[in-house]
Length: 233
Image 1 (cartoon, rainbow, N blue to C red):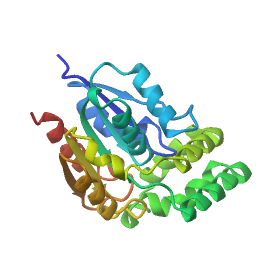
Image 2 (cartoon, rainbow, N blue to C red):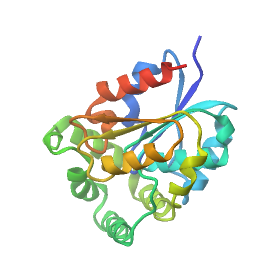
Image 3 (tube, rainbow, N blue to C red):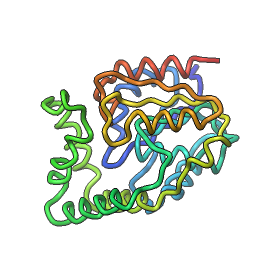
Image 4 (cartoon, helix red, strand yellow):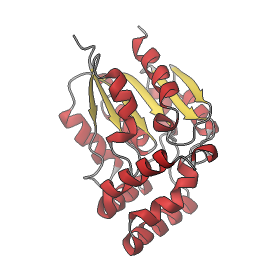
């Protein structure tokens, strides 16, 4: 008998393949689902869509943009969350510089396609020692192509418009695991620690040798942390 429902929320430009190693490991024990992040222009709307199809109680894990969605779900329906996993994400809103960079990437996607976007982003998504890994590069490229230009535009608009979640962290008593790749340059360890310190009941797990896409860069280590956390009473 399965132990409950676990919903994963992918990050920007990522499909459910971002969590494939974890789904393989956990699917026999949990009803593992992947949230839809392709249809809405705001983080709150993504959260509403997730809640509309989720069971009354569930565990939730989000990476990067998925973490923004997970925090929105916590704000909207705290009583429905059994446990929370926040991976390589931030509680902060976009800076002006980040928003400008996003606008440039959207223009690049519209002009030159998704392969041009991933070429720019790969050095920030993957730890330096993973950037020559052809399997990982192909996985990132494949996810981006599957997302496509139009959904990429929607996702960037949603991220740009997200709220500052730092003030609500203290109001989320749900037991939380905060995971971050030690070499993450997009949402570095300091931002993960800020989240963990702001939550009433959180543990920080730093994964060596991983960048921003910890679940596929160091899948065994990430899965071990998630499995142990879900098994806790």
